[in-house]
Image 1 (tube, rainbow, N blue to C red):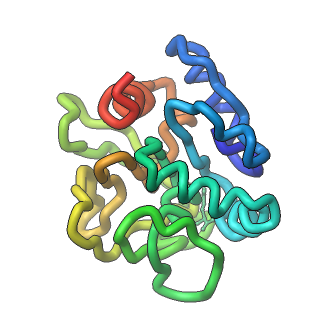
Image 2: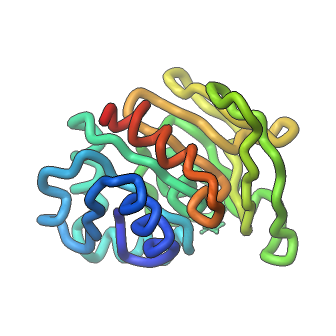
Image 3: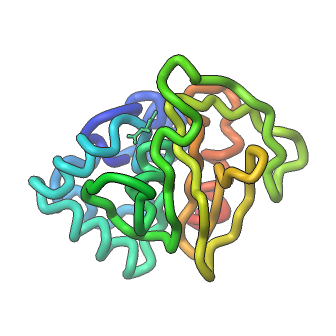
Length: 185
Ligand code: GLN
C-alpha cells in the first residue's frame, strides 16, 4: 500500500479483512518482497511530488517492470498513465494511456454509478470523486469498465486501474479481483 497521501487506511482495512498482510510503503526499502502495490486515491500532484522526492518514482517503476502487480485507484490511475491531456506533473507511466484528470468536473460533481465491469457478474457501484478517465489507450491495455465513452477501469498484464473508489464501499470484489487476477494470490 503506497502510503504517502490519500485513502490509505480504507484500503488497509479491507486488505486485513481479506486476510492479506498490508505493508505501508513510504520508503524505497518498503517495496522489498511485496506481492503487489496499491496506489490510492488522493491528490496525484502531491503523491507524484513525494514519489520524486523519496526516490520511489523510479523504484515503483522498476518494481512494476520486473512484473510487480500494481492497482491504481483515482489519483493512482492518473499516476499510472503515460500522459495527461493537460498540465505537467510527475507520472509513473505504467500504462499506455492518455488520462484526463478531473474528467467528470470538480468536487461538487462527485457521484455514484452502477457499472458493468468485464468479468463481474453483477454491477459494481463506483464512487467517483473528482475522478479521472482514460481518453485513449494503447496496445496491451484491456478496457473493463466505461461510463459512456469514458474509460473508467482497465487492466494490463500486471496492472489494474479504476477511476472510482472501491475502498469507500462495502463491496470488496475489486480488492478480491486485484488479489486474484493481478497478484495471482
Ligand atoms: N483528480 C484527482 C487528481 O488528479 C484525483 C481525485 C481522487 O483521487 N479522488 O489527483
